[in-house]
Image 1: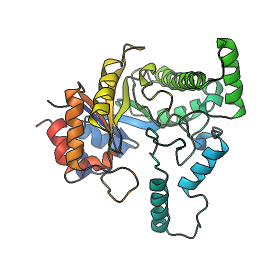
Image 2: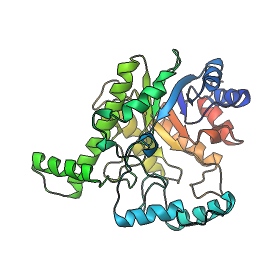
Image 3: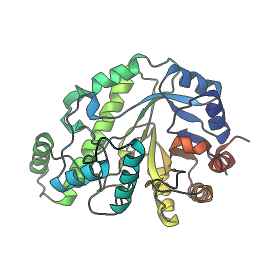
Length: 335
């Protein structure tokens, strides 16, 4: 058995890299300029034109967390470190801190407090996509006619739970009153999950109003603590949800998540196809979880046995590294 569709979260780069991706079985790939776009087409890969994320850099106000979460975020991002430190020295300290704090890089947390190292913009505050829409227009402005579509990523909460700015708290208070609900973890989970899905869907509707031909591919990330697999509530054409993170998960969890991603993809929207996502890091010296080629191969076998026939991987650059490339070519390549 092999995968029939394979999306890589990485750019095609030069001619040699593009050829290796194609030989590894990559069918769909992210591109951010014309050179990458042309290389994708040359080697038979479907190009997705750029990726949108609601960062503070586009003008969104930053999300607000609790004081303890803010403190954690500042620590793992090294805001207190001397600016005179070299990049290598700084990274060494950050790796040590993230291992100490069991930081999971946006995956499912294993401790009570875990956050992103950088803050995401408060998309709930962006009424009618007044800020988001301007950024989407910029991305769509130079999209090639034959581009397959666009990617969405990094849409979620910095603390994996919610944003506590005045706009979000006011909206949450209204939600409780309208729904006649008490302020409980379950109520918070419902509110913030539904705001996530609503934002995704508004962005997708906006893109398709400009480019009806575009397919939308997403990775549901970062993890939402109250509902890990909420992606089927999103009307993306291809919905990637994590079934195996950078840090090793056990076989039963990979099986369970894969079956959910595939079998429950159309619960809310008939057009959605679920894509099992694998986190891959080939650098054993990093605080990001490391897996050997043999361990990655085992994950691919589990996903295939559970019914998965589509695949999404990040870091895409590690797909073509020695040992890993041979594994992907075996299970995804055409030959």
